[in-house]
Image 1 (cartoon, one colour):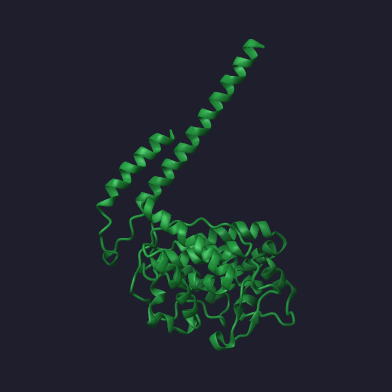
Image 2 (image 1 turned 30 degrees about the horizontal axis):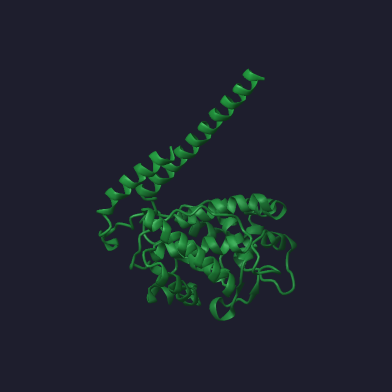
Length: 309
């Protein structure tokens, strides 16, 4: 089974090889072949080392969020396409300070040039959550880089209320549950007055991904901890409040929902490439085939033992 899979994959990727020269500026993403997957895994390892050593998980998660959170499902513009690296977009008020993260990612990009910026920024967000103790988030590569930045004002305003949050997230195609789960990302990091006008961390350990953001929300005002108007809206709105209560008492439920919502955010407007889907499908078939083969061998062995026993 493994040999058959390897042979089929080799033939498939050889056929894809002819497409490698296609331009990503013409609406097509990278060819996600074995070589691209290898580069992506290399970037993942280097991101783990970088984020751990620099303790920059919060700003990497913010970078991923802000690149993806501009998506508009009606116009199909914005989203996780790497455009946040453009000076024009970096200068948006909501993106103050993110040049630090963009520059850090350049170190990884230099070592893994095949990986698109769009993939790199979303992978950085995934790794940031994982290395700080959060859930494992499924990552699918193949995003297209874009040089077109959306107009300013698509990201949430920290001074907004529940209606504002719904307006922003519904525009992306996300749900009430996604709003609350993704807000839990504030368990990492702190606000800086020179960037947002607010100051302070949301939790007592801003480098640990857990459910303490929701625990602190239900406690009300806590000395030294930040609660933005958008944070308070999660407690005040009855629908949002139910999720806040659930996540405060059940970290496993939060991790499960967060991983799903983060994946949705990171794939807004993105359709996984055929090559990656094919590889996953073939790998699943091999795994199932191997399991069946192993079961047959074991049963045959037990039968022989019983027959001669």
